[in-house]
Amino acid sequence: MKAIFLDRDGVINRDPGFGDYIKSWGEFQFLPGAIDAIKGLNENGYEIFVISNQAGVAKGLFTQAALDEITRNMLAGINRQGGRIRSVTYCTHSTDEGCACRKPMPGMIKKATAGLDIDFKNTYFIGDSRHDVGAGKAMGCRTILVLTGKENPADVKNWEIRPDFIKKDLMEAVGWVLRQG
Image 1 (cartoon, helix red, strand yellow):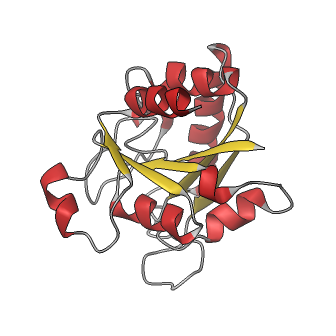
Image 2 (tube, helix red, strand yellow):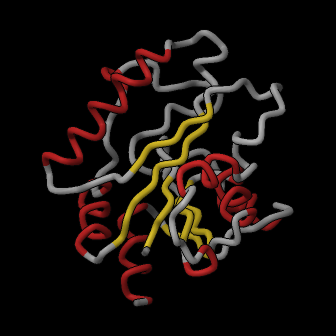
Image 3 (tube, rainbow, N blue to C red):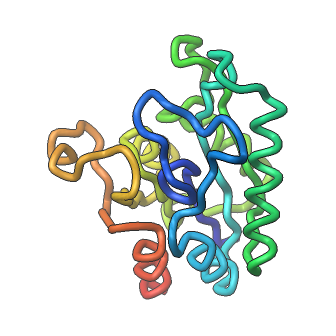
């Protein structure tokens, strides 16, 4: 199976910034080109898995029901424009719970792909943070950092675990992946 892992906030939709969360559907805004990028992956045989930390639930900033509504509406918006997401997996634990699913740990990827035949070394994790890069690397994936979210590209050289590639946004990253064959 050809798979791609995507973070949500800062990759598919506008990231609200450090310390803030998308707490309701009204705050969710697709990034320009994100749905077309997803559709392009689908048209080239890729199954897309969204892997996202959402500690705002554990912190009481929004409810599981609000997160479910955001997810339903996001998927409906993508589907209306011809894209498909195979699954969405969230870690709703707080940062100090020590779970195995919160990125940079690979638990969400393992959960989302249980029983599937995926060649992780030929699979990409596209995200906007060092946590996304860490999770992708922990599963043996190639990683692409997109510059539409939290991170400052000048800081990347100081990261302990660095992305394999850096692209402007999801559309540029997907175009590059598709050109690789």
